[in-house]
Length: 95
Image (cartoon, rainbow, N blue to C red; front, side, top):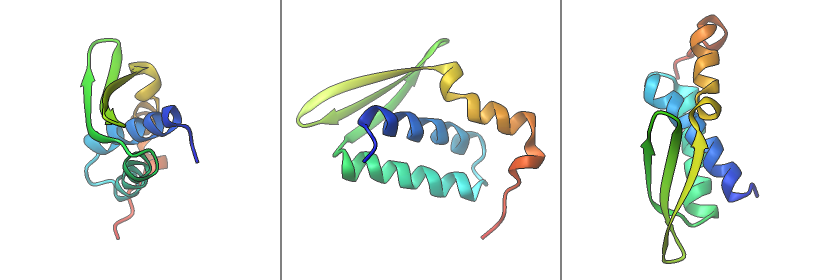
């Protein structure tokens, strides 16, 4: 099992891609997989994202407590930036 920090990072990275590319079925499938890790494996609920100019903040409930993780925008947006820089390498294949 991935650590909670790794699972949050992976989910948030692909979530940002999904939000910008709603037609990307591979990204959507991957986001669902990581969401399942967060909610089933790590037992998180009430997951919310907040951003500012520098960071992404993920707020969530775990074991009866409200918690928060933070990630630099440049780290989270790297995959989206790579896709946007070379879209021909990330073609969407319909189902």
